[in-house]
Length: 231
Length: 374
Image (cartoon, rainbow over all chains, first blue to last red; front, side, top):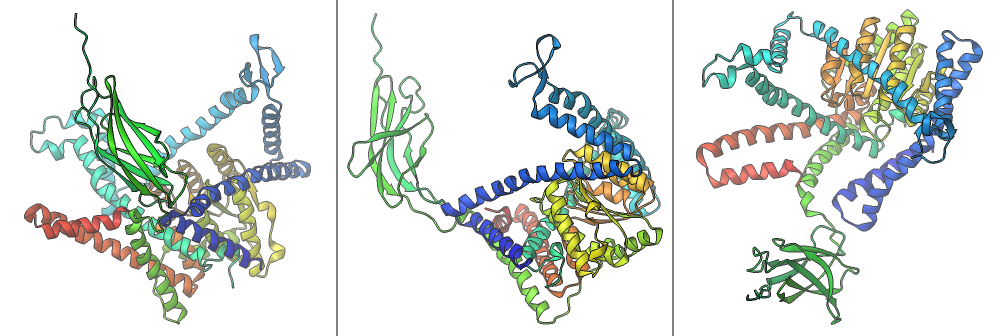
């Protein structure tokens, strides 16, 4: 029963949504519109569940003085400060005076201030790490150890300099009609528009078929791994 | 000084009303031939669409701008005849057309989606057929997926090293099919983790994913005969914020040094940050996503990568269940149809350029129609 009911719900909802795509019946259109709303309602309740879980996990770590429990203190304090600032609508009004406000337009909310001045810079810091990771990953990926890796290296090099002024500058002397392909910015654009796009589309077609097959397995109840497998 | 007299605009001609196609009814489309004065802004300012039902006086239901020759009207009832009149108007007066009427009806099938329906029948039909063949006992050959063959080795390594297995099911919610695929694979992997008595750490970026993952892992531990080994706290919620989540997972990796990292689900810019951090701690890494832009990052930084469709096939591959493998075989048939269409379409397009025979154009159009979804 524990497995039958979820499989039944999946089958009915999946069948309804497929039918709604092909049959323009009003009740199917309503189902198509309402079912995502059901998901949003469940997800809204899950926010409370998530917040509760976060507090429970970190308070347990603090109370047990687990390894590196101090990080948990930062998490809990950050969570509670943001929660209270948002719920109580703490803010600063005219002249920067701190006060309780119920009017969102009145002054600046502490919640927004913390988000913009603390959270956003932290987020930008994490994102900027990507530049360094791209460099280290490229260093490993582009080592010309095999013929395929050499092709990859050359393609990457062409695209890299084709996107900067250097590519145009170095190959500006190439006469027509050869420059249509050999001028590095043109060559870079060709690599992106043909071999790269062809590869991406192939992957996307495989993904589309994979999604259909996976969905069908779930709708027919053949895929049960998420329910612990078995019959 | 003489006053300029503006004449009334000529009326629109050939007014027709039809039931709006491919809908649930309650809509009629009124069309007309533009007035000869349509281009003259001094004489014609637009068209008024008037409606009447059962001989009642005509009432205005909408205004169309000059140049517009049709109007879609929402009607209150299906199966009732409504009559329409279109009146051109301008500073000099109005020009009234003849009348036309129609009834709206509900259509059982959206004909603009026939090609999608045909593709669905081909793909789903071949999947269903292969599932039945598998049920009948026919052996299915599925090519090897290196990333999934390495799962046992990866979990075994974590057991030997006494380090946990890290599992990240992407940063999207349960309404994303990649997250669902990530969790179905988790079902199979966590069974192996339970059998090997290794610990699992799974930070989640969505609380709904956390709840589902807990149920999935609990059931897997139960079916592996190790319900006592299941630790709920190993699967926990972090934050919905993309880089807040990444900061936590990165910190976790650096501190706990998991021996094996699985990244299976929908990933965005965080893919490379996670994979490079995993690489720096020497973890064996298996990734899989259907985000084409993130695949190169995983390929560069991970030991094994499930590319696109392999993510959706992984659960079936791991289970080695005949019915599931049959569905993969059916999926391959869909892929073969797509490949043949691309090949034939390429030849036909080339031939069309050289020969221009109508039959080639017709065939080419049919292939294009089949895959264009309309």
